[in-house]
View 1 (cartoon, rainbow, N blue to C red):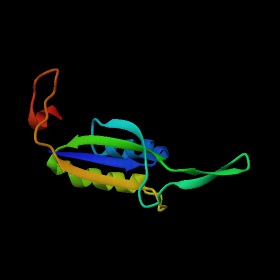
View 2: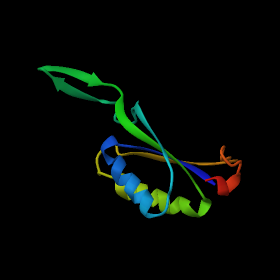
View 3: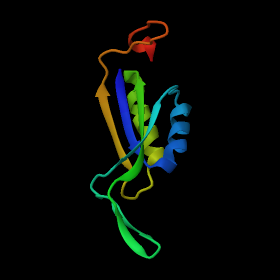
View 4: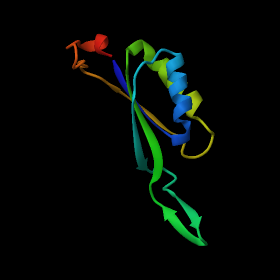
Length: 112
C-alpha cells in the first residue's frame, strides 16, 4: 500500500478528481495549503501598488492506494494537473505500514 500526496494548482482539482475516479480511485483527502518551491512566490499589482506573494495557494491531495494502482494514479495526476507552467506541483509516494478502517476494524488493503 502507498500514500500518494500530490500538490497541485487549485483550479486543477476537479480535473484531477475526475481522472482518479475514472481509474477506480474511490477516496481522497483534500487540503487547501500555501507554500512555495523554486518559484519562491511571485509579485502582483493591486491598486497600483506592487506586492510580493510569498506563499502560493495550492491544493494537497492525499490518497491511499493498493500497490497495483500506484502507477495508474500517478499517470492520471500527471496528465490532469499539468499546465506546462511553473508551479504545476509535485507528487510524493510513501509506503503505508498499516491502514485501519475505524468503523469496521478492517486492516490492510481491505481498509482502503
